[in-house]
Image 1 (cartoon, rainbow, N blue to C red):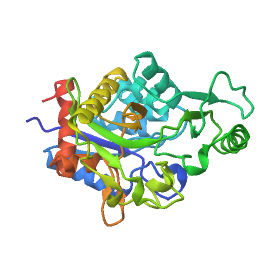
Image 2 (cartoon, rainbow, N blue to C red):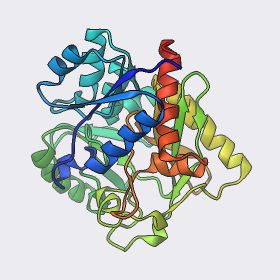
Image 3 (cartoon, one colour):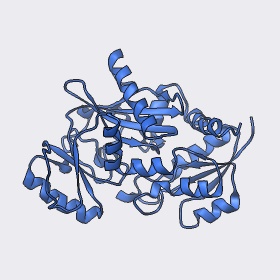
Length: 331
């Protein structure tokens, strides 16, 4: 096996503010670094700031392990893929277009709808008093259009009527300074599906969120409060208890979604199943969280699913690296 110099490129979480919740904490960065070293490669660290392009240009690593959320802008998750492509450096993960599209929830849903992959009905509001065209079935869940890690999503954003919708829209547009997605709320079971690989990606064991374990203020909305204040391994079931037919259906929808959106190496697909058993894709994350600190309760779904597949954290990192190495023909 060829020994590569791998640049681990990410944003370091330095505070617990809402907008840094999706950054990688130092503990996660160290776990990933150890995984890269354990796979037999050298590792250098690059912080994502305004000097990142110059640092990558200076280092010229063989491969970039992209964990970057970017630093600003509506396509910020595309910044390191774009830098890498400009410099001709191979990188782990999805490309510029896919990372930009998947950060924009309405655009993701439009592409899914075009390909006849079910997703909840929706409307995008640029102003709180934009007209409502057509039928928008209540209740609807309001989400900032271009945020990750459930930023701006909680039970308070589940609205049940016109006046409540307008009032909450005004607050959210003032807070997040971006369009707000109003999405039909699907009442039912919520699943997360991890994929690893490329042409025939491996589907990791399906994870289900057990809302019965959360307090009433969370309800059945898996938002930022559920992910932070009440995060616990006890709240998730992996592998999920599903029938063989349900599992095949969930895996099929996840794999189709992965390919339709051009994901590479790894991704996480979130979906709901309604009372009639119909699946709806909610969001697609080509840059899934990798936190796995049991003591602090900082746990991301992707490594939980990998663990359920009998992979250690380091083995998961090695497999992600190998997917990119094989795709580029670097071995």
